[in-house]
Image (cartoon, rainbow, N blue to C red; front, side):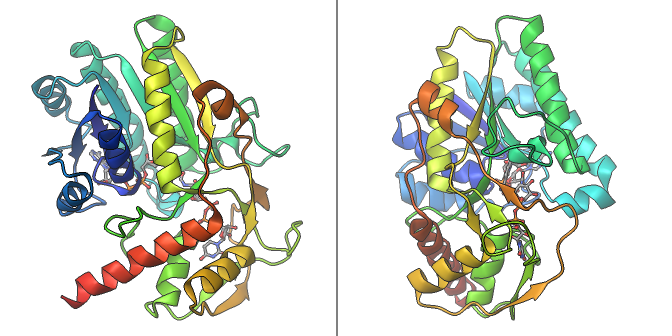
Length: 338
Ligand code: NAD
Ligand code: WQD
């Protein structure tokens, strides 16, 4: 298939691009580069041996979306483009509703204009809110605790209405748990601007000496060691989940489906630190800090529906996640030294 990736130059989009090319699909990326760098395209070419086109533009620009869908003859869209910083969404909600919700609406309009009705959407486990039971399956009630999460919920609801109104649509909603790690080549990975919000990039930067120490947000949760437990999933497993979901939805009789992409296994913050230090033979100094507002004690997936319906499951372990994150961090250090 010919597939358009909105936000394709970003962390998850770039990994999905490599997985799609290795499965024999044609890919075009569309990105406004607000949180990525066009140089990633050269690295994707080095990994895949294929020059993947990047069209620079904004998903809120309907003409630009129509142009790229038609010019490249896209048959399906995987929609990653969006803003994702929880704290920023609390401070600047309008920016999040505009970029994420209006952007998705404009994308849907352009897809309908161009008669493209197959869509895979990047949702998030954040839509489960405070877990009422664990593991979280797709039937768990949804709620939002911040504007970012609310944009994901609103988009999910929009997609359900669109699929109900016109049986031509084939839509997959993928709820990611905590994507971490990097491609084995070390050429692409997660490189947030400024101080990272997420645990794994923070740990990598402490190990590299770019940050002094990790603050562990709370050690008095109701978890085995008191620190927060999450379902970390290797980004390459996550990418393979997209290929499986796209292929399933394209031939499905159902207009819309929702799948969790997680491992089903939770690890605590201190387990993450220990694994990173052990596998990479580095030191990650940390101190216990107060809880972070809005954090839950534990969050992990039931990956059963994806296993049953997509024939997909995550198979890379925590050591592989930590080793690949560190390989990418060292690659960044080499690049910065050049
Ligand atoms: P990312 O910031 O690395 O990638 C998003 C890409 O979208 C960036 O390249 C950015 O430049 C682009 N973009 C943003 N707004 C745009 C716009 N208006 N027009 C065109 N391009 C635009 O983030 P990521 O981690 O790769 O996340 C991809 C998607 O997955 C996002 O929708 C995010 O909400 C979702 N998600 C991410 C995580 C995570 O922990 N990384 C977890 C759950 C869901
Ligand atoms: C993981 C654990 C922290 C940083 C967030 C978003 C969610 C989703 C994924 C997009 C928690 C602890 C973290 C640090 C720490 N994104 N931690 N010190 O909070 O599960 O999810 O990213 O959809 O919407 O909310 O991930 O990586 O921020 O935190 O102790 O410096 O690490 O308290 O227990 P989270 P995270």
